[in-house]
Length: 69
Image (tube, rainbow, N blue to C red):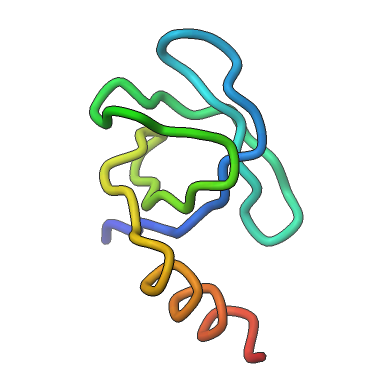
């Protein structure tokens, strides 16, 4: 089974990587599949890669659903 999770970008570490927050835990992921990833963006992470960038409205909705707020 495959799982992709939304995560908020907290740091751009280099040209290919960034650090994201997933439910209070941070991890380094690869961002080469997406253009213009910035701190504060919410991305969908699968197998250590950011595979989609959410628009702000969708990001808020998805994060609200996950946190139950």
